[in-house]
Structures are given as structure tokens and as C-alpha cells.
Length: 399
Image (cartoon, rainbow, N blue to C red; front, side, top):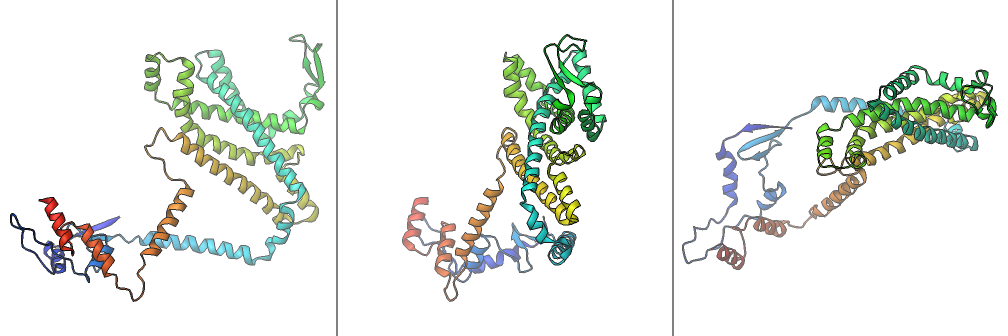
């Protein structure tokens, strides 16, 4: 942002008039005269500013007005405070021996921790897939005109959003108290003549955690998908119906791509929450990442370094998911923006290319910059040239 200060035009045009050392008279008909030549001493200043006069007070002169950049003093002050806090925290990390970085390095790639990490990722992947598939079905039910399907989906979402996740996992893990055996047989009876399993054998700790996480996630995913479908403009659906497109094509080619722009950010947010939500399965003694570090620091009493191991692994998983979210959102934004924003890699390449080109623009000590700048000044204005032949050619071409 800049402020524009009014200035008399005579003050701004005076240096420009002095830059012209040889003002040629206007060419008469039938004769060709050389164009005025810009002084070599003044050419670098004009070329450095991109043909825009520069004011000595720090601004630039544009169309007779002095443009002065706004001083963001509050922004600079807050930036200094934030930089101080960050540096203070980094200094504490490096100087405080209580962090015990040697213990952190010892357990960061420990086999037990890696196994807990894989179990965390497996729970996240399985629960996420089941949760979003079931959530899509529930979202369709919620949008259905059938009162039974709509009511059943509403009841499911209400119930599983009301009960805490830890309680759900414990109920599934102790389901054997309610139903000692599960199987298939005659409906509305306990005659499982087809197949029958003991409940405690069928629902292990991993199965109870997966069922609890999946059903809990499905309730939230259903609302996210339903909101994305409702965000699509109704007029487009009506236009597609007027064209006679089949219902399947209307959903997969028109509704779903537009709904995905609203679904993807919230869906990735839920997946990131699901990664951290797997830590509650320690209640059924399932050795995922958090439970594993708990067991280790209960033995050696190195609480902070082991907790730091779990924090760093969770942060790495979240970082990878955030990067994936950026590229998925960028892909589904193709139909909403005319030009996609550059990726971080493209920005880094452009910045590196700009800085590299600036290195070549730096003037060498003892080398007069006049020839290159004079050529640039003359090439910028076709009417200004030091070569009479070139001036003659351009003037003749214009004539």
C-alpha cells in the first residue's frame, strides 16, 4: 500500500528535460533527422527505475505524483515480538539439558516405537476408509425423500456423535457380556445354525478399536459429505436434468467434482483428527504409538523424551497429510479459478531464478555501465538512438 502525494508537474518534468542533451528539430517533410540522444550519465538512473523517475525521499514519481510507501510500524513490531519468542524457544531447546535429546535419539527409531507407528497408521487407514464409505451411505440416506431412511440416518448420526469415543470402544470390547455368542441362523432367535462364534474371540482389541473408530468417524463424515453435496448450486442440477443427462452422469460428472471442493478440506481435517484419535485405544491395551511410549517411560521414567518421540511422529504424519491436502485441493480447484496458484516447488524455482538473474545484473567495479544502459535507453524509445543509420531506418519506417 502506498500514499500518493500531489506534486507540481514542472518539478517532475524538469530533470527529464535536462536529460536530453541534443534536442533535434521536428523533421520536415522529405528530410530525415537523427533523434535526440539521452545522456549516458543519466541513462543508468532512468533504466534502474524501469523508466519511472525516482524521488530522493524514498518514493517514486508516477504521472506527476510522488508515491510514498506506507510504513507498517505495527506489523514490524509484532514481527519482532514473534521472532523473539521463536528464538527464545529454540535457544531453550538447545540449551536445556532436561530435554534429553540423547534419549530422544535412542528411542525415535526403536523397533517397538516403529511397530506402534505402523499400528497407528493401520488403524487410521482402515477406520478412515470404512468411516467415509459408511458416511457416504448415511449422507445419501439423509438426502433421501424416504422418511425411514432419513430418520434412521439422523438417529445414527445423533447417537454416535453423542457418545464419547472411549465409551464406544469399551462397549465394543466388552460386547461379550451382552452377547456371549454371535452367528447366523433363524431370525429373531438365538438359533445360530449356520455359523456361530464366541464374541470375545471374534471381537479382539484391534477389532473393537477399528469398529469404534469407524462408526464414530462415519457419523462425522456423513455430515461433511451431505454439506458438500448441498453446497452445489441447484441451478446446475436443474440444467443437467433439462439436458437429459442420466442421473449417474449428473452425480459423478457435475455434482461430485463441485462438492469435492467443500468436502476435501473438512475430510482431511477429520483424517488428521483420526490419526490423533487413535491414541485413545490405549484403553484396550492396543500397542499403538502413544501406548508404546507410555509403556517405555513407565519403565525408565524418561517421560519428556518419550513423549517428545510421540509428538514428533504425530507432527510428521500431520505434515504429510497437510501436503497431500494442498495438492488434492489444488486439483479440485481447476474448475473454480482461471489460473492455479503456483506450488511451493514452483515458487522456490521462480525465486531462485530471479535471484540468479539479479546476480548477473550487478555492475562490475571499474566498468562503466554506459554502453549497455545507453543501448537499453535507446531500445526502449524508438525515437532515441545514437546510430544515425538506425535512427534513419526507424524514422523512415515510421514515415
